[in-house]
Length: 156
Image (cartoon, rainbow, N blue to C red; front, top):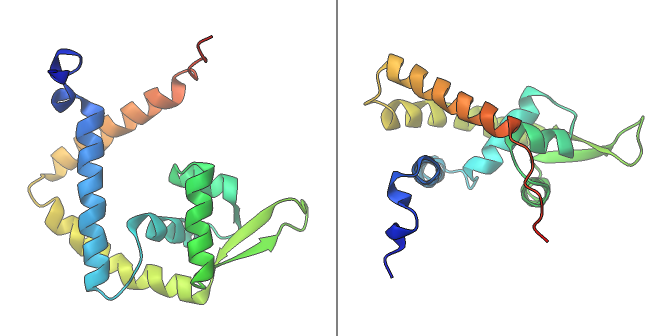
């Protein structure tokens, strides 16, 4: 079977963006490990966002980091087990929990920020500033379009 007769995946923007993102995450994970930190890029982003806005809810953090409920729960559980975040009951809504980085979590964000900057400088060195700006603009337009798309309806 020649699958390309159904769909040319190698020309698909979504596949190309996803493939590049996966390669970036793998390389960044190696950079974190080389710096002596056993943290995934996803965990670092969650910690970073919590340092940026402490006291977020899990739902808010999931939306901010584009993680579904299962993924954000798994990441938060691992971060909490490692002592990098804490969960506290919301004083106004006892059903909800607020999330906070611990001092150790803040230390991880501080320690890895230069690693991320250095990684980006090397990984994207072949892009001009103009190309990087255009790429961010194009990706933002795609995200905005995706946000505006209606949810698919279940087929009977």
